[in-house]
Length: 227
Image (cartoon, rainbow, N blue to C red; front, side, top):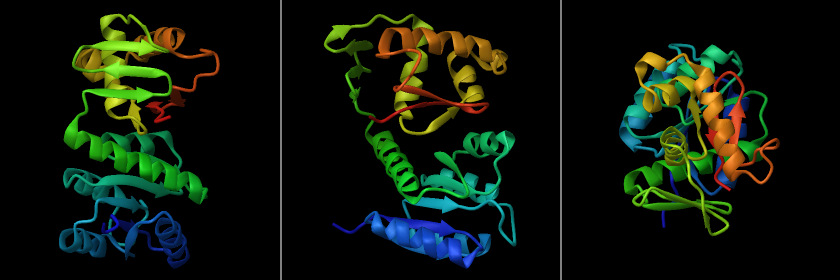
């Protein structure tokens, strides 16, 4: 089997080399670009399945690449020194699967890349049932079991959990969750979200005060963990 190909976009040569070495170590092939123009050309000619994108590029803002690559169906992870919450939300809303702030741990970055690629793969098949630890979600029957016992969720709670599960491993922003589950008029009613997440955690987490299933990304959104 030919290894999946990942596009690395960063204008700093040492960062590109570090990312290439890490991605190769993870079993993937790499393409590397130092500018937005070069990255767009490589994406068009080689069709990589994923991309690691810096936002501070010499010829354009990397956020343009995030949107373009996401529309192509690529799993995009932003790797940037920019750590403002607004930057993270913008990238995620435009289709980024994840956002990693420099400096970063390469093993963690690889884990996030694997999660993003799994999510993209699952999107093509939309499995009818998924498991996260001892929690099993049957999308077709709209049933949830924990340790073999059925767990009943309120309709909004189920809709929220399903949206997180279908994007497992990646951050879903507060606005995305609120618009989808409660409607566009409630895009800023974050308290609705907090109440629902607390309710889900009480029903599904081993220790709701130390959540392992649904993780909070402060100021940005929530992530349902893959394991």
